[in-house]
Image (cartoon, rainbow, N blue to C red; front, top):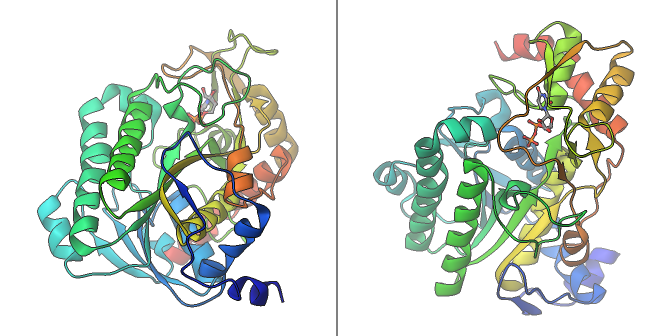
Length: 374
Ligand code: UDP
């Protein structure tokens, strides 16, 4: 019933223009409902998903498939997994290689591009800045070159709260100053700038999604986090509990927070994936460039996350206190009001216990999945 109402509004009406990432016009609820039809109407669209073999990319592929769409996954498999591509068409190419990218994508058309492919580890980025600039910034420049050559005109970019640096407010809105303190954050900000400039100069539109801390696994445990090496807090703690990983070290307990450990805003990977579909919907009837934060808006300290992990596991998890990790702000908590208002998105996994519980099911079934994958 609702869909019929949305369809009656028409498919090519332009309802609003957002020219920058910061000065966004907030649209009325009627307009927000309108753009739900485009991608949620089950009309079998085809999307390019760079980094679709990775953690958040593969969950987004899955969300698109659940809506009746299909994808082409572009990945260099440096960190992604073939099992995560879910039977979709795969292009194996390195975004750093413009010639190979041009050849692989010549003459292709897509209803939109989801751009996840990037290096994403803070500590690694500070050790290997050249690798991060080449992979993330050059790779995005190459992708956009090929996009313009082929006449593609919509992109949803995977970005990060790391673009903000040390917060000067309790929660971070999109207008917060951007002073990244890691090379990773710098490269993501450069990717955003490049995309914004492309939108200003060409008939091209983009939504840039700044994730806070992606966590959890698919509700049926068919997809989840599988990094090698694993560096993120929740899988590291759960692997330590399961005896399948290294012991847990808490990176610093002398931060200016209640228990001295860093506070982060953990957001379930399925909620992140869903936000990408909402963002692509938004681009059906909006031009220009906007950036939106994605988080639950609630922060948890490392020790609070550890307590949630212990609850999921049903046992205590040993840890030691180590030095601070370079590039870690004390607190990062999202103000995700814009994503809710403008993209009509709502997170559904809103407790840290639910997020950690899904990750624990994934960790426990990992060996079974590995066998299945051969
Ligand atoms: N962390 C930690 N020990 C670990 C991994 C992470 O104490 O083994 C801390 C890290 O310093 C940060 C928080 O947990 O404060 C989340 O880190 P993670 O690497 O999961 O995500 P990030 O915030 O880097 O995106």
